[in-house]
Length: 98
Image 1 (cartoon, rainbow, N blue to C red):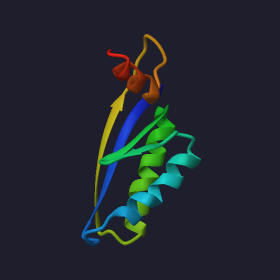
Image 2: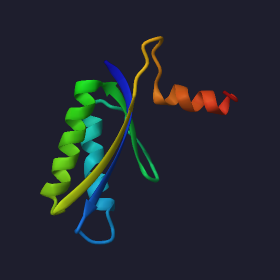
Image 3: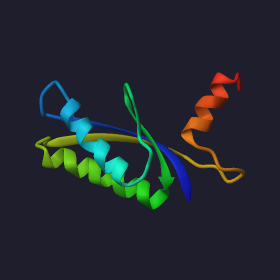
């Protein structure tokens, strides 16, 4: 099943700055071919369900491996059965006025 998704990984107990932790997830998402698009409070991806969730699991584990004793991850998932739709399609639709 093709999905679009958003992940926000928050390391806890590892200091105030989290950018090095977030940066560690980008190559994981890219290697999975998920077309990651970083934004201020998370990252949007698109791909097959199993590929997306395998990469999300690897991101979560990587944050622990980098020294965060706790990790809080939020995930949003959307799918369509009527037609294919990318994250960019959604953005373009908004810019076109809906």
